[in-house]
Length: 193
Image 1 (cartoon, rainbow, N blue to C red):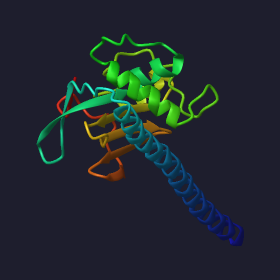
Image 2: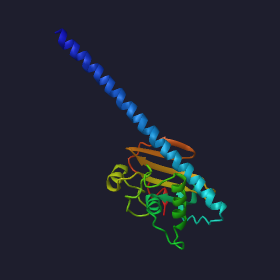
Image 3: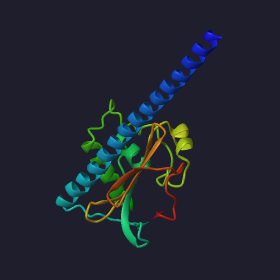
Image 4: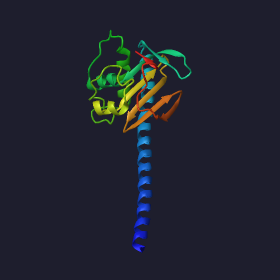
């Protein structure tokens, strides 16, 4: 009987330790992905400032619906442009989305993204508007890289970011970062291409 009681106490302690370890690991993952998201926001803001000081015309041909319901012209960086810039594929300067390509290129420079960087987008081969509206986990399984959507305005401010990595979706809007409970990226009703 005493042996059963000892085993039961050990099982309770083991389960408590397991729960604590799982929670610690999740907090560490969130912290890591949050830092990556912050770095992307800062790099995007620096990239837009760099280009505007070079008199680069920010051709913002997309529309974003802000949290207050108003709409604004914007540019958007997605995995498509980051992968193009990282792989060295050069976009046509007369293309409508050339601005997004240039911003993505500058963002990668800001992130010091080389072949050994943790920001790996080279495996992405989807469309320019991916991952908008896609399931986060399915996107990661399909392309094997983090999902990124960055929306910026004429002033170089990041209006919104969604970044999915390590099973964590970070959402940034109105100057606030949060861990999103959604399992899909924002849809085309919020960001129109």
